[in-house]
Structure formats: C-alpha cells, structure tokens
Length: 150
Image (cartoon, rainbow, N blue to C red; front, side, top):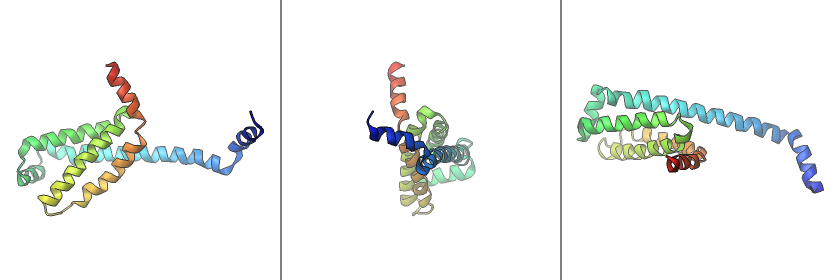
C-alpha cells in the first residue's frame, strides 16, 4: 500500500464529511422508503380502491372518458399491483416505472378529455416515481437473474 493510500484510509473515518455522509445515506434510505410507503398507500387506497369497488365517482369519470368499467377495473388492478410492487425490493424500480407510465397516460387523458383539470397531479406524481425508479435500479439486475432462473 502506498503512503497516500494509508494516510487517506486512516484519516477518512475521522473526517466530519465521512461521518455525515454515512448518516446522510441512512437518512436518504429512510426518506426514500417512507416515500415508497406513502405512494403505495396513495395508489392502493386513494387511487386503486375506488376503481376496484366501482365508486360512483370513478364510474362517472370512466364513463365520461368513454372507456367503461372494464378499463376502470384494469387500471385499478394495475395501480394496486404497482402499489404492492413499490413495497417489494426486487420490484420497486419496475413498479415505479410502470406507475410513471400510467401517470403519463393519466396526464394525457386529463389534458384531452378533462380540459387540463387536475393535469398537474399526474405530473407531480411522476417526479417521486422517477426518483424511486432511478434509486432502486440496482434491483433490476436481481430481477433479471430471478426471471432467467425461473
């Protein structure tokens, strides 16, 4: 080992940046996990559930779009699957990406059918979903490995 390497490695744990970085990484993980749980609750309870139980407001919205109850149940099931996927480590990145794609579709529908009313909501949701998909992308390798094995 060179003298420079020895000096850096022996002083690294004592520097304030190295100590705060460890804590910062821990807090970032906690914040990311909390965000995933909040989004899973939102998609599972506030978004998917009304569609899956055919709440009158959801039925009315899908009738207004012209898609009917079949599309309503399908989108509700996809949102519920995405919510569950956000909580399963190997599926987190894929679930966030899939929910992000649903939000792109929701944004387009809000613009074209509902004249932009509530169009900001899907755009706002795309931001944390993108962060989750990027931050958890390392799990995609494990998912590919599992799919090849199975």
